[in-house]
Length: 251
Ligand code: PEP
View 1 (spheres, rainbow, N blue to C red):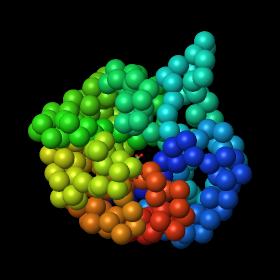
View 2: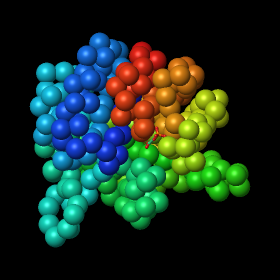
View 3: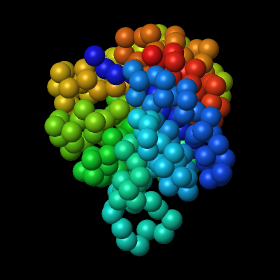
C-alpha cells in the first residue's frame, strides 16, 4: 500500500561538476526502478544543474534544510521559496542540524509547517542519541520529537510527510541498528504517534524510513520489515553502485 521511498542525503559533498557526474552515473540505475520513489538531496549550489539533469526523469530533487520565512534579513539561510523553486522534497530536523546547528523541536515544527504550507513534501528526521538509547529513553525521545514536529499540522496535508527514524549513533558510524529494533520503534513509537496526531487511517499511509549506516548489503533486511518503507541514505548515496543497489533492494 505504501510506495517504497529511498532518499540520498549528500550532505556537504560534491561541487557542481562532481554532482553532475554523480547524477549521470546514478540515472540509468535509478530510472530502471519505477516502483520506488527515488529522491536525491544535493547541496543547493547544485540544484540548478541537478534539476535540469533530472527533468526528463521521475527522480525527485530534495533540499537538506530550509528556513521557514519566504525572504528577509536572515543572512546565510535558504528560504522556503528558494527551495520550492527547485525541489519537491526537503529534509527537516536531521540530527546533524539538531546537534551542530542548534535546531530544536520548535524550529523543526516551524520548518515543517512552512514546508507543508508551500506544498513541499517534508522528510522529518527523528532519532535518539547514544546516551538516550543506553539510558532507555528511545521511545520517549522519539515520541516527543514526532509530536512536537507535528504540532498544529492538519490531517489533510499529513500524507505528504515522510518520517525518517535515524538513531543518531547509527549515522555515519557503520553501526546500523538491528532491523527488528528499528521496526519496533517505527511501528510502536513513530506510527503510533502519527496515529495519535492524524488518526490511524492516515498514519497507515505515511511512509517511515530507516536511516543510519544503510548499504546495499543490509538494505533488504530493513526494507522487509512491516513498518520500514525505505531509507534515508547518507554515505552510501555518494556511490552510484551502492545507492542503486539500495534502491533495488527497496523494489
Ligand atoms: C544520514 O545522514 O541521514 C544517514 C543516514 O547517514 P549514513 O547513511 O551515512 O549513516
